Structure formats: structure tokens, C-alpha cells
Length: 241
Ligand SMILES: [Zn+2]
Ligand SMILES: [Zn+2]
Image (cartoon, rainbow, N blue to C red; front, side):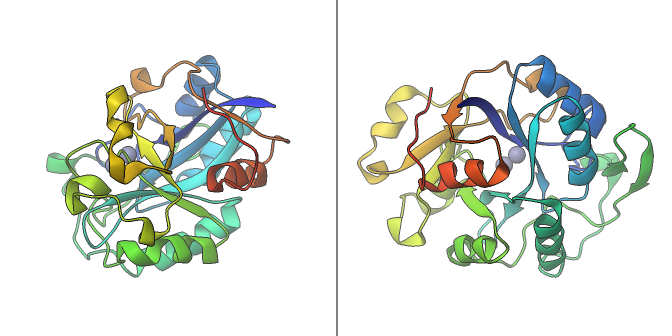
């Protein structure tokens, strides 16, 4: 079956995410946009994934918990998990590797925990958007050990991206798939170092009006997180639009 996806979305728990990106409103916007499968990927946390997944499911969407991990090298990597239990364990691991800085809400923005009814449950005081001390080369196996799948985020962007930091795609890192930003020029993927790499395109929305309509799809045999993760990993016959 064909599922329209957006697997990189931020909530109000990301300091750079708008306070309007509540789990409930974000899920409603994804449903309005005609998406089928969505993932919440706040910076270095899965803290709003439970309410987001519940709200998305209430709208009939398939929702995966996720995180946009920032590595030691300041490279962003989208990490997706089959369920909240795996995501929660991964988050606890990442929390031990996050630089111990306090957030300044005046400068960076608030980091709000909310429930699916959009009630504020609290505010995270640690700065979530900094880097961890987790090296990029360890991320694929690390995320896999928690049952998840990881791919480098927005590789066509100059900052916080694998190509922006390393300059070249290194196949030995073991990522079969990379994310392109929606502004990526079509010729970008013909770079010789990207031969054989598969791509997804996500919105990386930080504001409600950045959630797109259904544009990019995957072909999966069933509507489950496992099938989505298998498609991303290239373990299923695939097709992109
Ligand atoms: Zn990013
Ligand atoms: Zn992002």
C-alpha cells in the first residue's frame, strides 16, 4: 500500500519549535495535510512522542516515535523507533550523553512538555538542542540496538548535516538512506559520492504552516511501524514519489 509520509517533525519541546507545535495540533495538521505516516523528531529527546503518537492515532495516522539526534560532530541524524518503549530507552541513553547546559528560554525558546489535550505538563530545563558526545560512526548500530533505524538529516544543508560537516558521503558509515530537505535541487543527488544512496524528503517542520500536503510516499506491505522501518532500511521492495 502507498503511504504518504513525513518523518521529521518538531514539537514545542524543541527550543526552535514554535509553541504552537503542540502534540495535538501538530497531529491534527498532519491529518489535514493528508499524511498517512508521521514521526515526531525533537532535538535529542522523545519527550513529547507519547502524546503525539496518541493524538496522531486518534486522527487515524500511523505515528512513529523518533528523535533528531545531534552527534559529537554536530551532525543531525533522524532516529525512528517501532514503539514508545524503545524510544524511551533510547532517550534515557542519549540524556546521559547530552552536554549539560541549561536552556535560556529568552534566547533559544521554551521547551514544553505537553499532553495530547495540549495541556502544558512542564518545561525542560536542560538545553536539548546542543550536541551529544555520541560519534556519528556509532549511531547506526546504536539505534539498531534499540530496535530503531537512523538516517542523516537534511544532507543538502550546509549546517548540522553529514555533508556539511564531513564534505563527502562515506559509505563505510553504514547509512543506506539519507534525508533531503525540501529545498534540495534535483541535481544534488547526482553527486558521485551519493551513488547507491536512497533518499527520503521530509518537511523538518518547526511551525504548523511548514507541515506540507501529501507529496512523498512509500510502498509498504502493511501499515505498521515495522513495515515503515523495513522500507527505510531497504529490506522491502520500495518506491518513492
Ligand atoms: Zn536538523
Ligand atoms: Zn529537524
